[in-house]
Image (cartoon, rainbow, N blue to C red; front, side, top):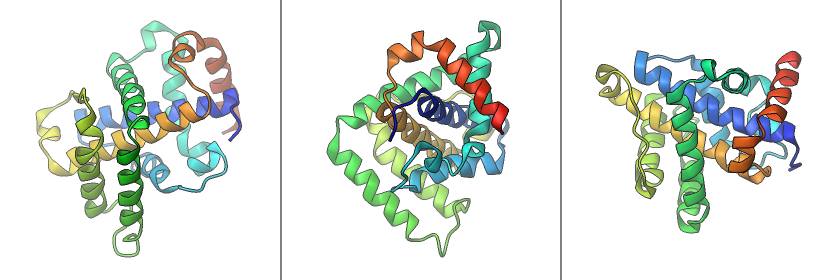
Length: 206
């Protein structure tokens, strides 16, 4: 993959998209179905040759680009909760990348879930349950756990809880991709202007 700022921005937007959707589900019990599917589909694009292919198209991560742009524009437009999730996902990616056995387990189990798509679609309750369990068995054990804030009514709903875990897994996928594209915590902190310019160009294309 090319390590361009464009690719880094798409991958970073993928993390923001997952984090934003997690917040929506935790607080309202709902989120845009197409955006959820776009994020979860990244988990099953094993042989993508470009960052765009991972997301299907630029449109697949457009929500994340908008959220990222909001966070880059002005401190007053930043959402502390989403930022907290993004930072946590980036930190967990570092721990995961150092754990080859866990990476292999995740890869094998995702391929097992994919093999059942002829019976259960991506947005089927069974798929959410399997992805949620995969997150609990792997990422959740790395620590520190991501504490999701929201309405207890929605968080105690098992389907919503599985969606949240599945989206956190997708957020980790984007964090891995961002790192593969040359993204780093220093760029995350100090590369705001270049990421902001890329967001503007990307949204102008959609």
